[in-house]
Structure formats: structure tokens, C-alpha cells
Image 1 (cartoon, helix red, strand yellow):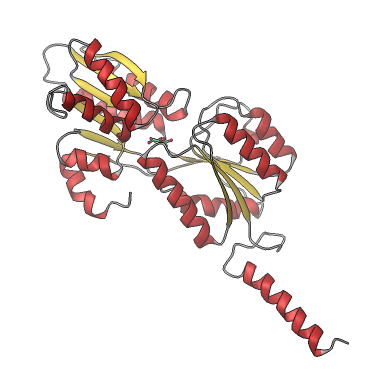
Image 2 (cartoon, helix red, strand yellow):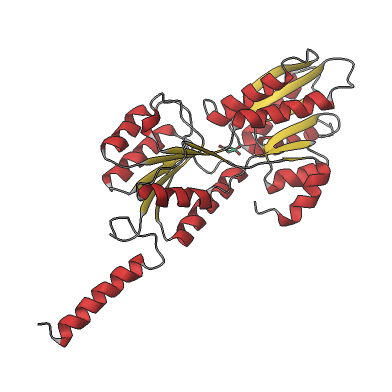
Length: 323
Ligand code: GZL
């Protein structure tokens, strides 16, 4: 029925299809690679850079076609990106919500379009749990609690008040809200530990330095800095040193993330304790994308395994640190 020419053409088409599909995570309907629309918060910190790298590399090795958008820390940009993914009829949408609130409308649009949504890293406060399939990330309240418990132990021998200044993460974000809560819960019963000032440093070094400069001017006595991430702690270290004080000695510092620069400061004695928050969510996310794409059930919440570092543990871990 078909001459050689037609057979060659058919083989060519099959080849291209196979090539697209080969090594790729084929769409459950067999229509080529799974397309994933991912809206990222921004590029505000070392943690975020590592998180983006993990997602992009994992998509590539999983053969998943990634449509990636950087929202530059603006919710309106994430909403625009999610609407664009819906228009493009991607198979799955995943995102790290820059803030907890204001997502129901756009998530209902994705649900109406029949596109499953996965939350990674940060969560949303929607009461309608059917708007997303699962949450993959950390327990930020537990992270704040670990930081507070360390300070309670560290302050046991202190006779006078222990004055704490707090650099909060981005206003309205799940990590900022929850790390603040967890820390307050942990120190709550200890009357001598007092948070005398608390303000957002937007998870960036620059803002962390700026706010720490203001704290140093406004507070007569600062014993401890609690920073919601290493980048703000590193900015604050610059301000503390510029004020002629020794970070880690005159002002103790407890932080969250455990990115390489933070771990180096811990090894150098400029930070005293770091609670880890793991950004390497890519491999687990791609497994979830394949399962959700195939209509498989997935757990409602998947928490990442994390640890804590003192100076000795940081020195030992640094050589193998991936981020
Ligand atoms: C936490 C993540 C936070 C990091 C910051 O999972 O959302 O955002 O702690 C980052 O470094 O900017």
C-alpha cells in the first residue's frame, strides 16, 4: 500500500515522536513529554537559587518539559504566570506561593481547566483543600521552634534579660509567619528572653543589613539576632561589624536555611547555630508530577527531612555541601 517514500516518512515521524517521548516522561495519554508550568517566587536568596537549580535540573533528567517563570517576589506575577500556564494547557502546574493568601480565584481557574496544582516550598491559607493535590516542603513552625529551643538552652546560665532582635522573612509569607510563631512558642515560657524588635528583612542580605543597622541604633542592648534566613543574617553581620561589634560573640546569631555562605559564617564563629531548610525539592517534585499527571493518588503533605548545625557539625558538613 505504501511506497518506500511513505515508509521513510512514517519512520521519520515515528522517530521524532519517539525522540520526544524517549527518555521523557510521556504524558499518560501518550502525547509526548509531560509539560510542567512552574512559578518561582524570585531569586532573593541563596536558598532560592539552589531551589531553582534543583527544579530545573530534575525536570531535565526526568524528561519533563519545564515552563519556568520568575515572579520577582510579586504575587501578581505569579497569578499571571499561572493563568498563562492554563492558557497553554500544561499538564501540571506547580508553584511556591510568595505569600499565603489570595490564591483561591486563580486556583479555581486551574481546577476548572482540569489542571492539577502542586504546592512546593511554601503553602497557601485556602480553606478549600481540593484546589491543590499536595504540598511538598518544610515545617516552618518546627524550624522556628528549633531556633527558639537552642536559645533557651543557650540562655540557661544568663542572669539578666536576653534581648533578641528578629529579622523576619517576606511579609505574609508562610516561612515568615510560621518561623516567627515557632520561635515565640519555644521561648514563650522563658521570661528572661525578650524579643525587643522584629521587622522584615525581606529574606535578602541588603535589607537584612539595613534593618540591622536601624536595630543597632534604636536598641540600647542587643544580645541575640534571630534571622529567618542566612542571607539576612549575613547582611546583619556586615552591619554588626561596621558598628565595631563581634558577630557570634557580642551578638549571638541563630539563623535558618544552612546555605553554604551561612555555614561558612557558622564555621568561622560569626553565626552560632543554623536550622536547616532543604531547597533540593526537585527530584521529589518531578516524581509527584509524574504521579499526578497519571492520575495517581499522592499524600496531601510531604515534609522534607532536615537537621540543625552547630559550629563543629558545620565544619564537618561544609566540604560535601551541595548548596
Ligand atoms: C523556605 C523558603 C525561604 C528561605 C529563604 O522554604 O521559602 O525563602 O528560607 C527564601 O532563604 O528566600
